[in-house]
Figure 1 (cartoon, helix red, strand yellow):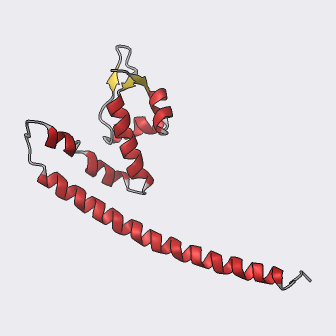
Figure 2 (cartoon, rainbow, N blue to C red):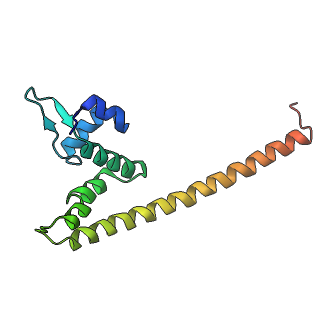
Length: 138
């Protein structure tokens, strides 16, 4: 098993070191493993989880929702483990609710952006038409 420093983890995930520390303080990331000198280090699984959180953040999901989404841990690990100490249905329902609400928000933003794109295209067509018609400054 290999271990990475926080700067190496930051470089590989594209998440700045200060953001990783912040996410750990918020509880988005589990407490990092520490060397005897107190330096953080990370495993390959830690990096996968960081990239997952980054992907949620890149979709515009709020940190509070990400925290709710990940606080119960990895559902796939729970399903694949022989011992299920707690039922996963509540976690699944919570995640479905979070993702549904988030998807609705993204759909609204998409419609708004499509409106801006359409208006920009109309404006560009107008300007190209003006150039074609030889409109000059006075």
